[in-house]
Amino acid sequence: MAIVCLNSCTSSQQKNNVIGQLPEESYIIPDTLYSFFSEHLNNKSKPITYVTNAGDTDLPYFAEEFAVTFIVKVYMCRNTSCFASIKRDFTDNKTHEFKSEEGGYFVIGSERDILNGYDTLSLKEQYMNHQNIPLVLNFHEIFKEKQDFYDKTTVCGLPKDYEILVIKSGNEYVLPEKYKYNWSVLPDKLKHGYSSGVAFNKTEPYIIYWVVAW
Image 1 (cartoon, rainbow, N blue to C red):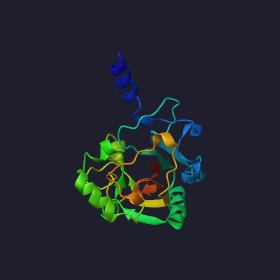
Image 2: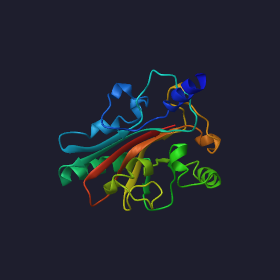
Image 3: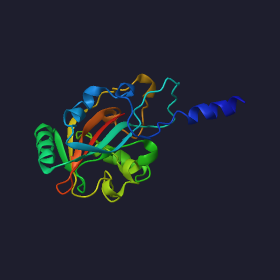
């Protein structure tokens, strides 16, 4: 009976993705990391999709593997002037910029998801080589069913020609203590942290807002 109960409890501790809006007060990611989302969301932007696993739970949490916490919101600008204005504002405030199809960046994702594309040795090498560059959220598991926003051949999973702008990043642990997990694959400098920003391309009116913490 105890074994059955333990299996039931631990299986419920996985961070499940939720598609749809959650109350912001339930997020476990500090709002200072994604406050720039709302600064650009108005009646000129139409919500397209929303995916997160950042909702809090009152249940005990026993981490069995490394997992990241994220919020992703996709909006469509209703006109070109809106798109140009948002793009200009974020470009002026970025700390780093990457091209989705290029190799000058790397991603952070949950252990279960990221090991679908890399083995442990290659992951350790990648993270050692990218210790001084902000990590980008791994979109492969988030968008793999949404073909408009997915390309399995890029490092991050976003389509080619996407510009990825990092607005905020750091190496501090910012989540509740019960979610903390030290993954042996990550070097000490990247053991914990956060990164947030936007992504878009020049030909489609979509803005992808993203934040990840681990």
